[in-house]
Image 1 (tube, helix red, strand yellow):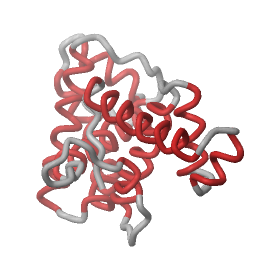
Image 2: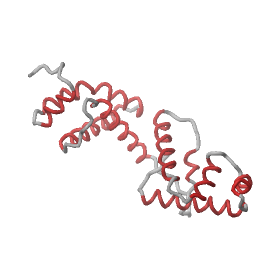
Image 3: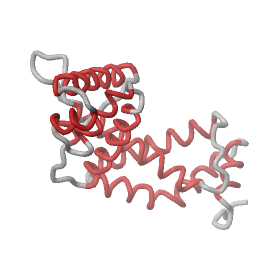
Image 4: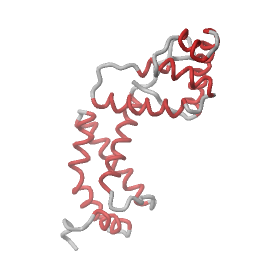
Length: 195
């Protein structure tokens, strides 16, 4: 079967897994323009886009060879998700979380400030927000409550103290421990927060 234009993605994958390496070439040729264009739209650098594109297909090949592909009939969305994740990984690795001089602490929420963003900045910021929201759920209830009131409801510590029926010092203490515990969770889970 030399002309494979009518062959489904799933069939090409099956043929590749059973040893027909040319099937993968057809699969790549079929989708390379969409995947490369997507990466290029984000990174805006042809050489970098080519590197990420190659990494995408290396990951796809390794996943197929390992027998870990199970998204029947959904090859393109799966491949695009791999390209998206590798692009996010690139930006995360190149822009690390800033730490304050001579201090082990940093204000996690300083890295979430809104600033003029291009598409990769929006993607990274969105992912950071999701990561932080998941981490917040691991905090003790009192710390989680103060942190959400302060950073998501923009409440002052006086308002938080009144709302939670504690002193301002207690509200400040809970916030401090919430940030310390978030930092520990970030280190334990090896999460890179970037801006």
